Length: 328
Image (cartoon, rainbow, N blue to C red; front, side, top):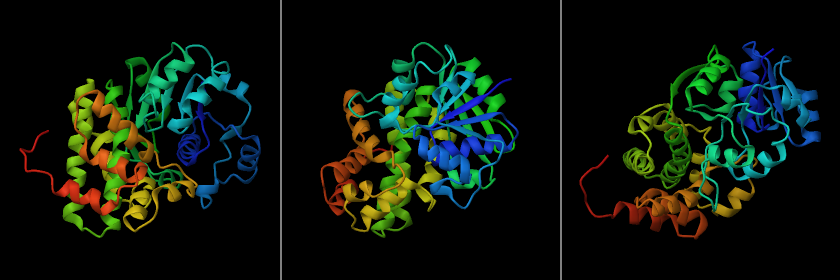
């Protein structure tokens, strides 16, 4: 019998596993912390999503050997912890089993996308990504979402048979690079949008930041070989709108706190969930330099978070940039 495993018991991984199990798919949710997994299996409630109960059909385990039964793995480990976790689980996964990333970020130092990090640790097998506008609490509450599956044709076809249904409507693309770049950078732009809200700059400035953020995402993707259309789709504009406007967005929440005067490092240290955009801002800025692409919003977000630049100064520098022809 086919089995899909979700690796990672964060809010998004748990929500995906629960939604697919509720749709009648054989699902396994794996977590590294045995005590937390045991509590999750007993209470059937996630600490960050406690108002929603997990379906009884969802199997939960901390035993790595259980992953060998899966013929599709959905990877829901935060980007900066992916390399270490992939090395730990390399021997547990069945050879050749496709791995689809649910994470959205760039690795610090190496600047690698999640699929590249996984490939280095897990060896030769198909890799893909599942992305799009999707809040964990809404999905766990039974609300539908539209996602895009990216990767080689056979992986995409398998993923669609496992994911597409009552909970998720799936679109498909072979542009894995574009989907991963869009998913990573939209979190950075969401921080900038949150800063606009925190500074009470109004809808006009926020809309401009989001629009120019799309241009940044597309410019970097184009320089790396991605397809422009990807950034107008679910992984790009779709996910960006949800993240920038919803009160549920963790990256927007980080920006909102910063714009309201919070210290970025203290806020990050006190969070129970991961705001991937904080780390992606720094990595993407360097990636832009590597490819000769200007990323003004991304670099200012990185400076505010990691170089203690005053947020008002960063916004002034963005708004006072010289006039230019609007590019793609």
